[in-house]
Length: 64
Image (cartoon, rainbow, N blue to C red; front, side, top):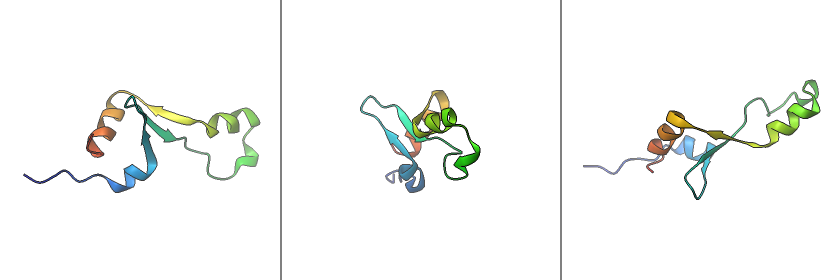
């Protein structure tokens, strides 16, 4: 049987922590920031955490 291929696009977009949690960049933080208030911009700077089935699906796609 073949080795499973890693999903290259996903590998560039998420990070796996030492404990196996899946971190990603928050959406809506790319541009047009002047229309968003400061509190929202601060929250968008932090990484998001995937949970449950989403995290499991990501780990499977990355071959973990």
